[in-house]
Length: 202
Image (cartoon, rainbow, N blue to C red; front, side):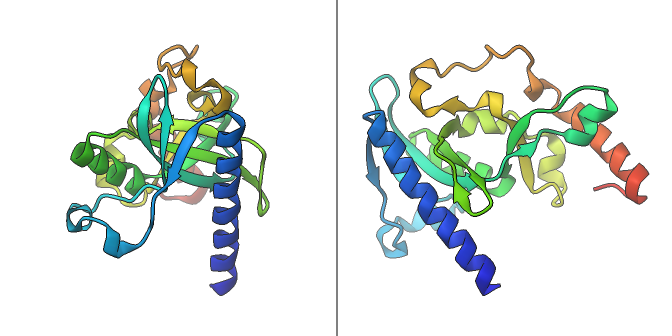
């Protein structure tokens, strides 16, 4: 347990360092948010919202909250798309609980929250940075995410993320295929494939 904690802490610290380096390269203004519990409104805890890591200011976006993550890339609904004889693509899997808690923070503060994701290979963050508005992440949550605790993550294709150098091109809906409209179908297929493999649904 200690080894896993130490590994996660190392990845988190190095991911935040990469975030700052990439923001500096692109001349983005940011400020770190103190994570000390005593310096936060009690309402944040009462409402079970989550604390972000930074405030980032972008001319055309204004100021937004940022939560930095270091994640390994995963294939997007690999079993479901294979069942449909289609190719999968890279994705990041975000925690359902964190998405919902950041939505609460948005509602309480009227400040938008974005994820900043650094791809991780092994224990090393890569020199890349992708952004995703939490509102866009919400599009990939189906009803079962809310009623079935075993679905504790949300799969989001890399094509829906925004490269650090292209924040000015933040547009949703320009993708060739809207996977966010197919989430329920992909989840249902995934259940069927999982049942066939293991004799039970996920």
